[in-house]
Every structure is written in C-alpha cells, then in structure tokens.
Length: 527
Image (tube, rainbow, N blue to C red; front, side, top):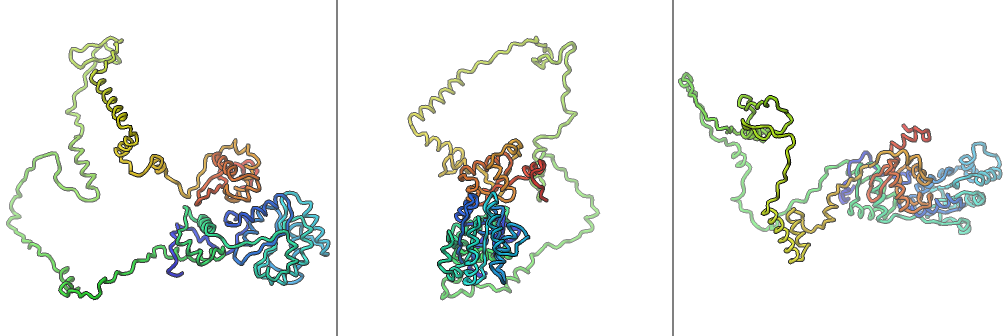
C-alpha cells in the first residue's frame, strides 16, 4: 500500500474479515445498502405475487450477493450462474426442473415446462425464486436465449429475476426488456453505507466495537467511489498491511536549522574524543591500608539507647512495608500476658446475667428491674440548632439564589465546572462495548411464545438479527418499534442475547434456550 493510506486503528482480529467473494445464503446480516430492493422482493415472495424482474448494475455492485441472501426468504430457490455450453434454453430448464421437481426429467421440453408450471401452482407457502445470473456471457447471445425462455417464465407462479450488467443491457432489444414487470437498477453505496459495511464486517472477527475513522472513510470513497467489490478489496489490503506492521509509526521529519546562514561557534562544538575521555576518567578512591597490629586489639563495645525507633534506613521494593511495620510496632506494642491485669471474680451467690453498676470493692448488685430514665436535651444545644437553621433560612430568603447555593455545594464536593447534574450522573455509567449480554432463561415464557416471537426465535437460531431488519419486518408485518419490543422481551426472558455493534443491537439465540429446545426434542443439537 502507499504511504498516503491513513491508519485504521483496528482492534485485535482473528482473521481478515474483508473478502472479495459474494455473500452466501445465511449471511444476509452483512448485506448493506440493499434494504429497499430486498424488502420489496420479499413482499412479493410472502404474498405469492409472481413477478418477472430485470436487475441491472455494474460489475462489483453486489448483484450476486443480493440474490443469494434473498433465497433465505423461500424454501424453494435456484440460482444459476454457470452458462451451459450448448442447448442453452433446454439445459437451463433442466436445472430448474431438478431443483423444484426431481431428477426424473422428461425428455420433451414442453412436458418439462408443463410439469414446472404445475409444480409452482400447487406449491404452498412462500413463492419459489428463480435467479439467472450470467455475468460473463455476451449480451446478444443471452438475449437470444431469454427470448426463448421468457414465455415459460411467464407461465410459472414464481419470482423470476434476471441479472444483467450495463454492457449486457446495452445489447438487449427494447421489446424483450418490455416483457419484464420491473426494471431495477443497483448502484454504488453512499458514504454512510460504506461506513456501515466496513464496521459490520469488522464486527464479525473483533471482540470489541470499531468505528471507522473519517480519514480512512475519505480515502476509501476517493479510491472506490462506493463500489462494494472495490471497497472490500481495498479494505482487505489495508487491514493486511496494518496487521503486518502493527507498530509501524510515522515519525515527524527532522527539524532543519531555521537560520542556515548563521555561523556556528566552533568553540561550542565538543568532539567525540573529549566526551569519551571524560567518561573514561575514574574518580580517585581512597587507598585501603591493612594494619595487622589493630587486628589483635579487642574491639570497642558500643552501647546504643533503645529509643523505640529503628534508625537504620530501609530501601528496596519492601521499604514501605517495613516502615509501616516499624511504626505500628512502636505505636501498638505486642500484648504481654505478664503485664495484663487479672479479671475480677464474680461474687458468690450472684447471677452472671444481672447488671453490674461499678467495679469498686463495695459494689452491690442492682435489682433486676432497673428503671431507664431518658436524659433531657440540653437547652443550649437545642437553641444552637434552631439558631443555625434560622440563620440558613434567612440567608436563602435574603439571597433568593438557590442555584448559587447549589454551586457552593458542588464546589465543596469538588464537582467539575461546566457540567449539569444529568451529565454527571450519565458520566457515572460504565458502558459495555462489544460484550454479549444475556439473562437467566424463563422456561414459562419460552413455552408461551406468540406467533411472531416464535418466528424471531427460529431466525435467531440460524443467524443474528436486528430490530432494523426490513425483510423480517415485512415478513411479520410489523414496524421497527414493535419488533424492538419483542426482541427486548425475549432478551429479558433469557431467550435471546444482545451485543452492541456500532449503532445497532444484534440479537441471537442463547445457549440455554437452545439446550432447552433440544431437550424438548423440537430442535436438533449442533456440535
């Protein structure tokens, strides 16, 4: 990569999440910027409204990914992207027949078409999906093949989508294009959609959330113009480069002499030899002289007074601990049993539970019922209390500035200036970024799910879902607020877990709920 590429600041990744290949079935949560098309086509499938659609877009705009993700909405779907080498129309019908009916294919083409029409008519549930995605075929040849297939497709009760590039569309005749019900155009992504695409891909392999820097977003938009395939390839190379050089820091250039014409004083220059000579000079040490006569003399005994404090300095990593032990030993000496006063024995004939009034030798036991007399409050203390309250009330009434008094209170509590009470309370919250949260499983709620909640549980068992999923909203015929309420209810019941990814919340089936349904026998265990 060039040195002009900005840093991404990516977190720790298990692998590179950016791949140039199209999305496969079951990865619709990674499809970005195609919600409108996907939602409208999903309504056709759920309402069993047969349509013929022509999808036109440049190479790399995500046409194949859109069709593969759309196949999740129906039980019967076929996506053909390998153009046959001969007998084009017959072999295409053959592939559709094998996918929808079976391997006992009639030898006659009209019989094959009749069987397909009958199969699509009697099928129940969602509408079948037929997608023809021949990106590498000449447009003129493809138009000749589709001119033969358009009549059988019009008879089938299915959603037929033919994918074309802009070059292929230029070679199609107008009368053939007019046979289709809709002509939809898929284009490049906008700036916010590119950001969402990169952040959603990064969330698949990172444990914490990541926000794309503005400089990196500008660089990607400038070099890709929002083309999804180009974005994925560029981000793949940027991530590989940053993972290969995690500590590659760009230093500032060396500061040049601001006044190059000025002469440097030669007397101020110190040579390297002078510096080395100064370091090699050793300080003079006193010469050690061993006197053998003094070794025969007896050492002088020195007595030190016990001041209770150890004057020897303590150094090292445990110096603080040693100093505290020394001080505590001086302030609180060890308990000495010999100096402890013996406990006084109780008088004979007395009860140990009776109340003692004194420790004097002539002390007597008080009667068992001792009246308790409340001590009256001292008049001076009461007067001072009321006088202080009256002074405070008079000060508040005189000033009338309650906010000023609250400011004095905040100043006494060392509250930072410029922040309101709501901001201070909000600042105490400790956000949890990227961590998956779940609650204890409520089996009673799992047994009594509504129809829409059961659909959410079914979808969450295979993939993550968000309350903003437009295709799922159309399937349930509800809006985002209602879907968010349902997801929150399932989250509180411990059926779904939630994880924050950028600006979206992603819900997924918890392991406890999965294990409970496996125990009931309504779900297969996954290894």
